[in-house]
Length: 446
Image (tube, rainbow, N blue to C red; front, side, top):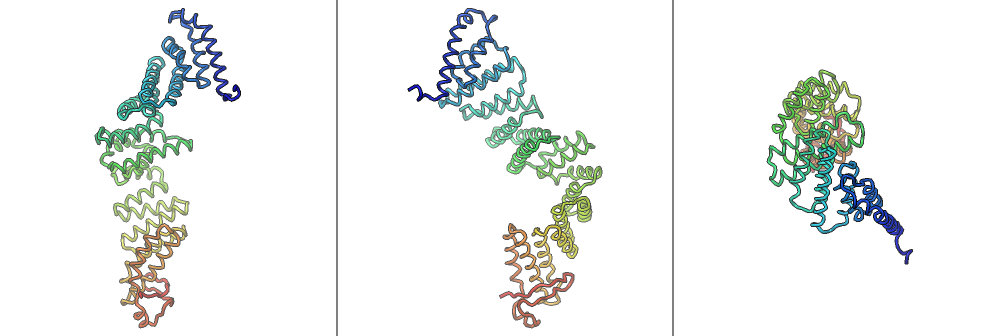
């Protein structure tokens, strides 16, 4: 029968006998002494032996003694106490019992603060444990209050787990109408400020990835709850006015504004132009080009796209810059220039389908201007369809948009009878005149 008992259990039984024997030897000495002369080291050894082998229930009695009689023995007893009571909580199913143990956790945390300080760090950990273990549907406000206290004390040094929980709870309390809009926005800014600060100078790829994920969480909240530029204006101005001539600060603010969809804010263009003047580079020029394109300032947009192109070496990005600049030329009705630049974009990235769609749309828009009669105007749609098919081959993800345009354009093809009058049969090669000057094949609207 002895060998049917698991080895771990045998070890625990043996250890328990040894520890109980030590308790019997030392109990008379310990009990007879006053608290001032209490043998804290012996109590520490007793509970520690149980704690080492995860016999948490047996560790409680000696642990309570050292907690009550030797509160300043070491910071380690509070760390051990949390481990012991968490181990016990993990074995409980009764919510009333669990909550009593959670109260004990809190008592341990508070006494640790009283004797060893570190209030910000310890309060944050206490909040997280209440949130994890307490069986109470109304715990969120209690936890949130503790998280607020921790963040208020630690500010940018706040532990990431505390910040993440703070972000999640702030949203929950806002959605439950416990926090009003203004309070929620202020909390959002507080959390973003902390994450932004932690990103500055961070070089560890894993930490950077975690911080980016938290930023993404905040960005999604901004979209979900429609946080507007006006609501963030004061914060952006505060960040800018804090160090308006520091380029790194300006870069951080501009990136932040892009992430929060605030690039149409007037301050944004001031910041990005300052960055560009201090150190011209592709990224800053590109942002300026996009801003002016969005606001239909054609000349400035084209200027900055050209600047971005001059400073960029990556063909994929160059293709994107050329495509967007082609869109700007199209906006200004300089269709031939737009077409030529879109073709350059395709040369830079042969798998880029969007420039093909742009060329197709330009040709369709110019069909009437490039035809001498109804037939030649309708023939332009053959070429437009060619470019749409190219777009679909290059980027299958564009298929739906391409197919919608194909349905529209193929209905504009000439009829077989019209082609006959111009001595053109199906699949004949046809030169589209005007500034377009490209060949295509004839097909008909059946």
